[in-house]
Image (tube, rainbow, N blue to C red; front, side, top):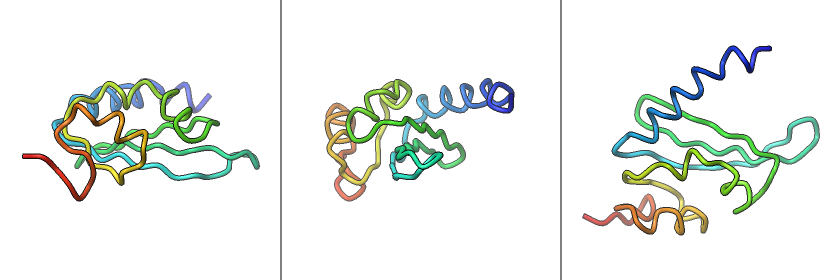
Length: 99
């Protein structure tokens, strides 16, 4: 019930984040009902979108369509799926950005 109430807001946030010029991507593992999940975050200065697939690694990342729509400058920690995804964006990691 609560998820249905939040769905339109989550979708609006996601659409706004992918249109941003700069976003930060990060991930962290956690457990949901004793099952490992991977929390993915795509955030701007004012918005945060989160995805929580029950998958891990590149499979988890590939299952989330929204982050792959982002075309701006991506700031991230160098995780391999981010590197592949951001190969065509101006920023490869949080420490090395092209001008």
